[in-house]
Image 1 (tube, rainbow, N blue to C red):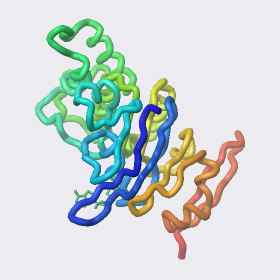
Image 2 (cartoon, rainbow, N blue to C red):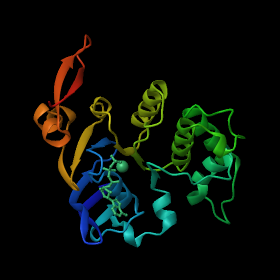
Image 3 (cartoon, helix red, strand yellow):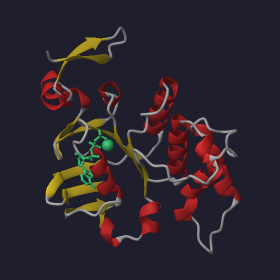
Length: 253
Ligand SMILES: Nc1ncnc2c1ncn2[C@@H]1O[C@H](COP(=O)(O)OP(=O)(O)OP(=O)(O)O)[C@@H](O)[C@H]1O
Ligand SMILES: [Mg+2]
């Protein structure tokens, strides 16, 4: 198993934010994580990424407890794009993406032409080629987001965790980044608010009040009943001319 959460809980000052979440992420799948604001998606992703330490439960990375692995081993396996992070303040775009190679470098394995090629390729994939020299603080919100994704891709992880990776992106870049992630031969877990986009994932996990309410194929999970219960809106499914289904939402009066 590539990534498993076993009875994960996370508490802060006595309040349970994530409660008994068990999840087996399948190798190669794109798993969408949906749920209302405050339902625990980001907290769960941080637990899976090893940024937060669980109050109880275990994260298993390739069948090893993540707690027992060092940062370098984890960094060679898993990359995380956080929901909000402004960590590259004094760096250029290129410097920020180069940080993605850190887990692969050592005294015996210094920066090489192969690393240059990887950085150039991921910048091209997120449509940021030609902006390498720009300072981080001069970038737009969507450009920053794409640099974060490039940094994670430069890490060449087996598992990519993304927290609302498309929230600042224009529609063209939303589709190209999601298409890119789905086409990569790696395992991805993506928190998303757009349920129509979530529907294109291999499976969907639904967070509600800190618990993982359901996991399964989009067509089984995303029903009008579940959408009403979890999000408090009515949903209607519409079939497009190519047979694909779209969801339309209305607030409950
Ligand atoms: N360090 C903390 N201290 C107190 N409360 C916290 C802390 N971290 C998270 N929370 C609370 O835990 C809940 C879950 O937060 P989380 O960020 O995981 O939600 P989310 O599902 O990612 O929401 P969103 O869709 O808004 O991104 C929220 O109510 C949040 O206020
Ligand atoms: Mg969040």
